[in-house]
Image (cartoon, rainbow, N blue to C red; front, side, top):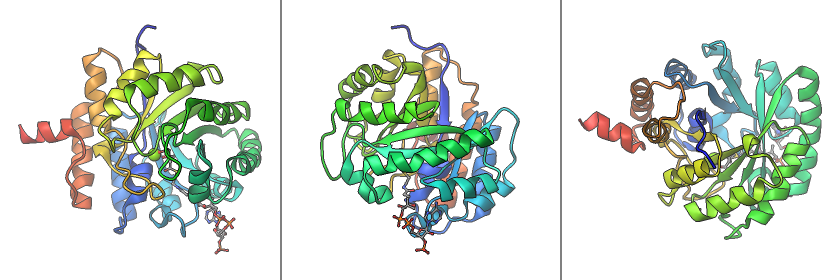
Length: 299
Ligand code: HMG
Ligand code: MG
C-alpha cells in the first residue's frame, strides 16, 4: 500500500493535553495556545470540551476560550460533546464541529462517561440528529483500542463494531485511540487491517498516547496501512484523567519531523510549532514533551 502523499494532523493539545492538568490555566493562556497553533499552520484544532465540570474541571472554561480565539478561515476549531447538553452548549458557543467519544472496553466507558458502550452510542444519536439539522460535522473517537487500564488487552475485533456504529450513525471520521499507549507497531497494523473492513481507511484516524514510547512507531505503522490522519498534541501535552499514568499524545512536533523526512505534506511550520510548544510548557512549568523541540532548543 503506498504511503499517503498528504497527512492531516488533528491538534488535540488544548483539549486532550490540558484536560489532565490539575493546576489552573487561565483562559488567556488557553487562547494564546490556540492562536499560536493557528499561526503555526494547523488546519484542525480541538479547542476544548463541553463535558461535566465535575468530571473534567479544566475544560469548564471552554465557551470562554471559543469566544476569544482568533478563527482563521479554512481551519476547523472543534470541541468534545458527550451528550445532547454538551452539544447544545457547544452550539451556543459557536462551535462548528464536535466529537463524540465511545470506548472499546466496557470498564473504561463506565469510568469515563458513566455508561455502557451501547448506552453511549444511544446517547450520541440525538447529537447526530441535532448536528445534521445545524450543519455541524461530527467526528467519532473510540478509546482503549489497544488496551484498557481496567480490562487489559483489547482485541481489534472489539474495536471494529464500535467504529462501525459511529461511522453508521454519521461520524465522517473515526479516530482510534490508544489511550494508555501500550500498543505496538504490530498491534497497530493488525488493528487497521481488521477495522478497515468495517470503516474505510480514508475515514479512520490514529490517536496514539506515548506512555510506552511506541507512539511514533505506531504512526509509522499506520502510514504503512494507508492511514492519513493523526491526532497529536503540541509539546506532547497531556494524558487522560480516567486512565491513570497515561502520558500525553505523540508530540505534534515529532510527527511533523517524521512526515517531513518522508516528504509528506502537512502545511505546518515546524519552527512556529516549536515556539508554541515552548510557550505553553513554560506556562505549565513543565519540560517540553517533544524530543524534536528539546533537541532544537538545546542547539
Ligand atoms: P453523569 O454524572 O452520568 O451525568 O455524567 P448526568 O447526566 O447524571 O449529570 C450529572 C451532572 O453533570 C448534572 O449536574 C448535569 O447537569 C451535569 P448537577 O445536577 O449534578 O449539578 N452535566 C453536564 N454539565 C456540563 N456539560 C455537560 C453535562 N452533562 C451533564 N455536557 C457525563 C455523564 C458524560 C456528563 C460525564 O461522565 C462527563 O462529562 N464525562 C466526560 C469525561 C471526559 O471528558 N473525559 C475525557 C475525554 S475522553 C478522552 O480523553 C479520550 C480521547 O482522547 C481518545 C483516547 O485517548 O482514547 C478522546
Ligand atoms: Mg486521548
